[in-house]
Length: 289
Image 1: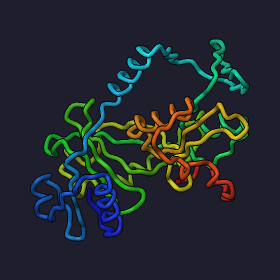
Image 2: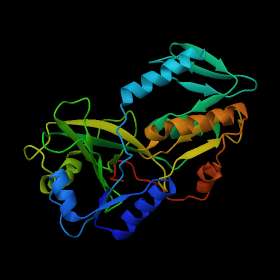
Image 3: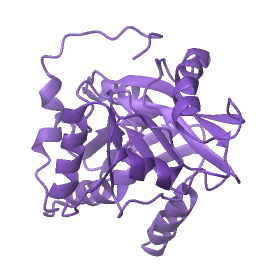
């Protein structure tokens, strides 16, 4: 973790300490020698030696296996056209048939606002199209990196599924609507390249490939977990702003507890949708977020 903004890196260190781990503060010289970087003396930095990189494919496969072993059925490539609320049964309608259930958890990412509005839930969400860059690299160690200088932080991590590459990007993008034509992200690439060319020992002056993805962004950058007021057997979670996957085990436990009426051990009231009841700002589509 590095930053030119003292308050931001101090908050990150404090958050780590709240989690029971001690940040390892480094000097500029220690960092540049260890990681072959070129940071300047206006940066502060520390290491989280407990951090790691998740293999998304293995995580998803493991969850699906556990779900099947518990008696669940995974319906892949099974689009949902409509949710019909009801008690005791909710109906999911799609081109490949209908599914009924006593309870429903909606985690539809950038499509969440569209799916939830007919159910009486209006959320001020932004669907943001962003990208990661894959850069040839044989020098930089297998470490994850975040620069917290601004809210649109820059990051890097080992590209475990792409040999000899480092995956880098910027926590920003272009607001768009799922289903519309993909927006032009060339300006995002152009604003990212100078940073990594200056401070990192990557091979060449530009990346070898790109990968696009979505953020579902709430106004305060925190997730929304709640129950539909008109349909209490429908629960939703959205607005994770690019952090949802890593939080999925804990969030899944919370949502299961909400469905089953059991104590999941967390106070989720700060993440309720009611905090946006008086939110008036309208986001302009196809603008940078």
